[in-house]
Image 1 (tube, rainbow, N blue to C red):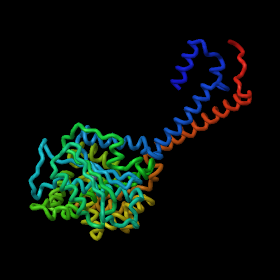
Image 2 (image 1 turned 90 degrees about the horizontal axis):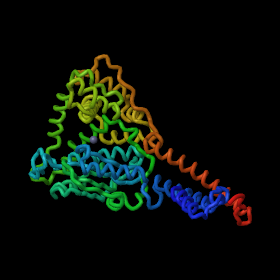
Image 3 (image 1 turned 90 degrees about the vertical axis):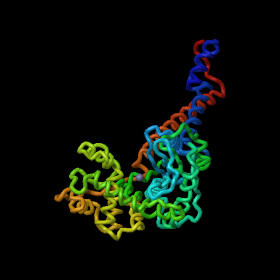
Image 4 (image 1 turned 135 degrees about the vertical axis):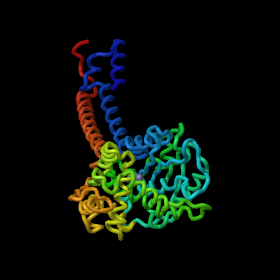
Length: 428
Ligand SMILES: [Zn+2]
């Protein structure tokens, strides 16, 4: 459009322009403009949804910015994981070191970062199930493609132990074919990946399979997700990963210490403000970052709340609960929502579970508790911000496609109905 305007101004100045040049019914400039808009519209939409050599544009740029901000520690160190629907790749961001130093001496307390790495991997498995990608037909991958990226060049011992930890995954957890870990010092470094790095190192050329819309996390219940990730990382996966260490990290002991700290920092039993409700990430954020700190429980954040909730589920409320059942809940939540999935698999409602927890002597939150409804089903395609963004882009694409096609055809028709000549000028 800008080129078109400049072209008209240039021709006008040279005295070579006239009304016919600006006549949208026949001018070659207008024909060029309509074709240009049409082509750019199609290219832009291919970029948005990720056709051919394009990764889904907006979503992949967001992912690239996310990875680079984690490496630069722009908002402080914050581990995380993504299993983006369709990619078959689990990406993990995890931190090692403290106060500018790395502890490279084995001890029962030094996990070399694997505890968090495995915790985040469990989040990937949860997301894969919530995306419908890991289902009851998914079998164990004997050979997992494991890549540990070390952009800030932390000591190799952390890289080696992280890689060995993922190689030691038991068959029940070998559910994702490719794992890429971004290993970052807690103080970060000045390093930036590019979009082509992301394709080469992580997702493959053109990010094959990557869904521009599907976002299974809309059906996640954060309280259970966080508790499950921490519990299984420390009590099941970490012990398997340290068997050949000279002085192994003791995950189960660390879990027991962590739980007694959680009871203490969250004021349990007896904290009437610790109402987990539906366990959603929105509610846990409000509870852990606003309500509880205001009431004097500064350290009772989302993760401790999730660990307490999960601990009550498997150690008090329903002690026979298994890892297989928990996986079935996430898989079922993909199609039924979390509340129905919880009830179908465990045989009691989320509301009954919350009521039991709040009334129990171990937690003693509210003796008159009536429970709280579980989180209902949300469509993982249309219920996410990516679904909304893609829908808006599709509407814009279709409108531009129709308008520019209509104007192009109209102009061509006018031009050629005049036997290929421009209309006679009425003035000069
Ligand atoms: Zn977590």
